[in-house]
Length: 343
Ligand code: HEC
Ligand code: HEC
Image 1 (cartoon, rainbow, N blue to C red):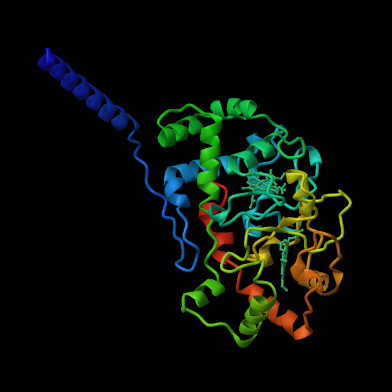
Image 2: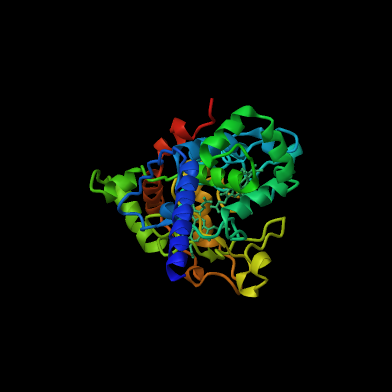
């Protein structure tokens, strides 16, 4: 009896293992890994191990990112607000533009080095990229659409059917697959090919003025805009006057009074591409930023303690800072044709 049971068990195991191997073979998609390159001076991350990017997934995400069918009236895509020339922010516009000529209340964020973030949006409202996409789709002032309706539009496109099959093993188009492909595309936006990065890698040296600007930066700005990503990922109140939309930032998400007027510390990479500045794009130039830190800071209960007395910046320090900021421009990122709209 015992032998009988063992034989049955062995047969059962063989069937199970064969079935599993067969299953794997069916799902054994022929995908090519996307070459993610993270410079040694960037903080270590296991993001790309947890969220692998394939070349095929990247290409599908790219097609989706530039597809106007995401919007209810077919007028805009992700790429309309997140423009490559502006480091994937909106070039020259303070507030974002959605369907039917509508305006949002915030500056479209530039998109790069997202793999190091764990919360998204100016107030950290979103704890996943999927949540960002879902909010964009449903917002009446952004895409004004529903995911179901977008899927119905994409289903009729045989090219998408082929691409989804290539990436996911079947031509079935679903929200998780769309969101995953978008994430494969945007998380490939690593911006690290700047003069600053070359200096960090001992491949170039700063000019005297750039070096002077770097020193000012380290003394006066780095505690929040921490290098090498130029943000410490925190939310802070830098004493800006409340805007006409009464946007109080992070308190709207947490309901905690201590979060009033706090906004995310943005990266200072690609500043020359991503202006206008701040959560509502209120400043277009560096002088306005410097004037604010020097003499515009408004006192309030939640003002960041580092800014209680403002940050004095002499004319020479300002010139040097601007020279340093120029070394944070990644022209390869903003002109790389792999990130542009597909043909
Ligand atoms: C109508 C303009 C608009 C469109 C279209 C749009 N975005 Fe955005 N995006 C924004 C704005 C504005 C924010 C900042 C939102 C906030 O702070 O509330 C943002 C934030 C983001 C963020 C968070 C970035 C960060 O660092 O926290 C990601 C990621 C993003 N968008 C990706 C996308 C993708 C992918 C699409 C297409 C599915 C898309 N966006 C479509 C305007 C837009
Ligand atoms: C106490 C933390 C803190 C310090 C110190 C600080 N910043 Fe900021 N910075 C922020 C925050 C937070 C924002 C976003 C505020 C908003 O949009 O409401 C910001 C925004 C900016 C922006 C706009 C970037 C963009 O893409 O919109 C620039 C430029 C800037 N800071 C430069 C500087 C410089 C130069 C210094 C040093 C002289 C400095 N900051 C010091 C926290 C800080």
